[in-house]
Amino acid sequence: MIKVKALRKTFGNIVAVDSVSFEVNKGDVLGFIGPNGAGKTTTMRMLSCLIRPDSGTAIVNGYDIDCNSLQVRQSLGYLPEQTPLYEEMTVFSFLKFIGEIKNVARREIEKEVMRVVEVCSLADVCYQTIETLSKGYKKRVGLAQALISDPPVLILDEPTDGLDPNQKRDVRAMIRSMAENKAIIVSTHILEELEPLCNRSVIICRGKIVCDLTPEAMKEQGSGDIGDFFEAITRGVT
Amino acid sequence: MSHGFKGVVKRELAYYFSTPLAYVILFIFLFSAAILTFKERFFQICQADLRLFFDSLPVLFIFIVPAIGMRLISEERKSGTIELLLSFPVTVRAVVLGKYIAAWLFLAVGLILSFPVVITVNYLGNPDNIVILVGYAGAFLLAGCYLSISIFSSAITKNQVISFILSVSICAIFAFADYPSVLNILRLFLPMGLIEAFENMSFINHYESMRRGVIELRDFVYYIFFISGWITAAGIVLNERMGSR
Image (cartoon, rainbow over the protein chains, first blue to last red):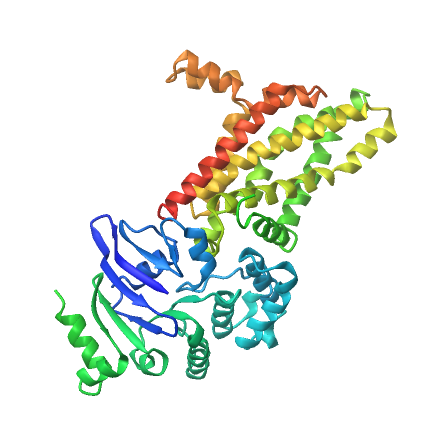
């Protein structure tokens, strides 16, 4: 469902992403991990058509990110890293707006909003303005907007960042429950959540993919600790 | 129409009517317009028309319109919501145009709310209401010109204060472009041909005829080119800022 072919992006002299290639199929939850500044967010932003690659391309749900940007964006749900939201809106009006802009049929919008409200457990705060919500709820609103129109591809940039342990568990369970019918990319710094969340993990370091394995295989190669494996791989790269 | 245009217009309009800032600006506009219209001179000239009201608008708009337009794009860039917005199936053109149209409609509401001024002059005498109507149309187009500059300034910077100052400055230049003092400064470093062209770009020249109730095609052409030029520039800048999407 996602085919990334030799994506490259530079900012001035800095090579942020260097010939990155990988594939994500339906049913996959791909953990995208790497040190800070490794190129995770840049890759995700290119896949979401927010920035244009210098070279290479990617096919998302059958559409090329370069030539079919609108169709690509219609096919995906994207959660940016900082979860930017229109804080003055209520959760309901915000999600309704997203439904409109994602071309959900007018008569279906409210039903779709209530569906994601239920999936993301937002019923209690549905008519509250977003600025009054806790960080955990804001994250869930961010996830809810990504789920509107039930896109076949989800790109989630650190979806559990800043959440408490219970909220993290809830979000992981939510992502896992949706995995069957979607291709999902999740970037994270938390190595412990790879096993319960992802069936594959890609490690990116200094713009290059240095490892593409299952979390179990990483654990095995790290003598029972994914952290050891991650350290060996990322510090060994020159 | 471009993808997402309607959604952007609706959200922006809802924003204006849900925040106190917009109401404050609206109040300042209406209050200032009333003061400037019914100042002493209005009663001295003993003429029931809206000349003083329409005369005050080009100067009032220099501050009011940038205050409405300064946040249009800069706020979204600063908060990061522009990234969210452009991750949806919308075009940059729809975003810029949608925001512009919503703000323009809001300014239209401001102009409509000045109706007590019209009622007052009708109570005091027998003004030519067609001239007033054409004057309002001219004021609406004039506001559109100022707003197009404001949205461009807003696309340039994430800082709303800088956006406001930049917008006020550019609007003032175009509002006073035919003033001898402005032209004298420009003569120091611009060739004569450019100065004449600049003089013709003044808002006031084109506003003047509509203010008097005269509709001329060349004024409409001027407004359309002026507005679309600045909006296109805003779109190009936003595209550039978002990494050449």
